[in-house]
Length: 136
Image (cartoon, rainbow, N blue to C red; front, top):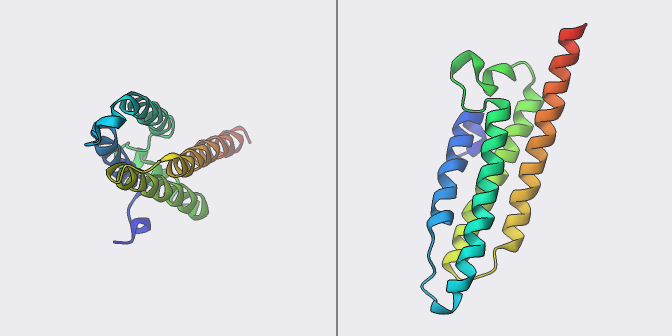
C-alpha cells in the first residue's frame, strides 16, 4: 500500500494506532524489566506530543474542517505533512520490530522525533501563512 495515497487524517489515525503496540509491548527477556518503565515513558511522551500536534492542526477534523481540505490548494504543504506522517508511522513500526528483537530503539526514535519536529514546523508555517493572508 502506498501510504502517501492516504489522507492526512488517515495517516494520523494510522500513527495513533501504531503507538499502541509500542506502549503495551512487554519484553520476554527478564533482564529488561527495568528498561520497560523508561520505554513506556518515552512512547507516552511522544504520543502526548503527537496528540498535541493533531489538536493544533485539527488533523482528525471531519470534512471541510479537515487538514486535507484546508490544504487542498497547497499541494506541496499537504505532501510535506503526509510525507512526515509516513516517516513517523514507519519509525513506530521500526520501534516495534526492534523491541521484539530486544534491540535498541534510539535511532528509530530519532527518526520519529525528526518527523514530529518537522510536522510542528510545518504547522507553524501553515498557520502563519493563513494568518497573513487573512490580514491583507
